[in-house]
Image (cartoon, rainbow, N blue to C red; front, side, top):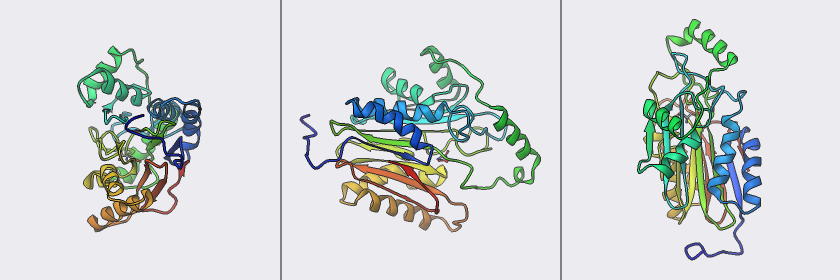
Length: 284
Ligand code: ASP
């Protein structure tokens, strides 16, 4: 295209996503990318796989509930034209990423929350579902009866968003981010994942970045947009992710349980990742 001249050295298409659950999600995204579909369709289709997996306890159906036992979902999506859409505190909808895309495409807004987001989803033809699985409910009951309830712990193992970034054959970038958030969070809590600039950011001139981990920490440095700006200034995706993590660590006295992880991709299709804890992985 005019704005994105094809550079023979670029590695494209590419898709990356957070955590091991990204393997299955990437497969679906790749089916789209390899036949020349655009990055937006790829990332939406990709993360829907994780949202619809009831065994996945941190995204979509089967996600861990809030402290009141309700599954509330956050998601956002952004394309190469800097168009974006998001939903937060959305209940009873299995695929919030697709509702976020509808917000982007069918409304003049960026973010719909709570009952308004649910009414909009139903108007758009999404089906209402019970998202709390028996397994998630049993664990929540155990948590309610445990000591943890009195002092909710930050646990880097109990929340794992799927965030996905892709560059398509045309060299255009898109990203998606979707989560059930922090397990047993206070009802009404929204993290970084539906916040454009925090959980996800795409600037087609430069690159894209996305986050997983403790949303409160990611928001404090506007994580994903910060990484994109660092890449604009010349940092590699890897260096940019590392600097963002270090900024977060600098702003927190207590690093115990402070899990944050970022992924980034630039216009060449180079990728990077960095996290505050060992054991962070991503799918390429
Ligand atoms: N970032 C998500 C949130 O804070 C959770 C996660 O990635 O595990 O809601």
